[in-house]
Amino acid sequence: MEEILYKIAEITGFVNVALFFMLASTYLILKFMSPKNPMKKYIFKVHPFIGILFLIVVATHGYLMLRGFQWHTGSVLGIIIFLSVGALAVLKKMKFKKALLFHYMSIIIIFFAMMIHLLWPALI
Image (cartoon, rainbow, N blue to C red):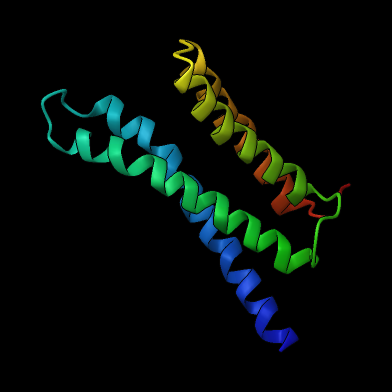
């Protein structure tokens, strides 16, 4: 049973990386896409749901790998991801204009935190 849970945890780690790059590439796709392209509307609608899925998979991966909460590079990364998604949701409800800028900046921070987590997982 322990081996199966570890394999699931490994798979969710790979899924996390794939979801992150899918979500982060949204900006580039929208930037170079024609304003009249009907796919823009679809991307705007599906992006938040993929972000929520990302949060769920991050939490699942962390729980399965660490068997609960412990301070770890992955825990720090998970908190940054949660803050990015949560802050954007709250700030958009409040009509705060800088919410999107914060969200874009947090993507860069998440990228570097993910690289640290992948290269030195036990740094903390």
